View 1: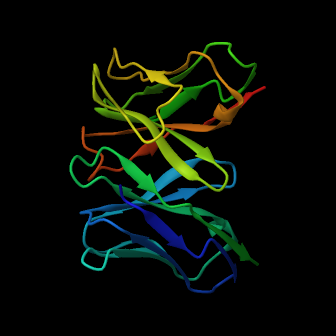
View 2: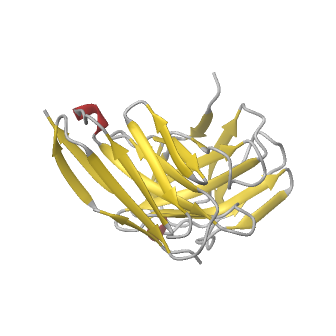
Length: 110
Length: 115
């Protein structure tokens, strides 16, 4: 079973700061999901990536499959980015079972 | 509007009283899954389904049942709920039977309290 660890668990930033959240996993995978959970509880998928880098607006996700590590970056952070960010690793064989990190609580202050 | 719906959104019940949480998606997705979220434990997979009549256990299936008789619906059944099943539950779906390379769409969540 894959173990997924995220760091930091909690992160407080000032508006405009560059933010990095890290995700490490114990078993080799071929893809990784990044999710965002809003303060109201809803979850949305931000990225699914299997190599390199993906960018969507101010969010950038990178993955290094060999090093078993992924990062989520937020540039020019804003209070509306305050949320819990969760990474999830699919089981290698079928991809149908997901193991989740515990999440990173991000608070961006104005 | 493409979406995953869950009902009810909030439920307070008592130990042993059977309940069903419904999940429905309108995107013709093959894959559907149930998760529970608990403080300090994060999200954990309960059951998943790769297509109609195909279901399999996730990491924490004890005390739960599921069925997939139609592509759009994937109900979660608690035959005899217990207080340790108090949690926030999410249903999710994705296009293909393998979740590996597919974005997952999440329902709004069901907050269940078992007294």
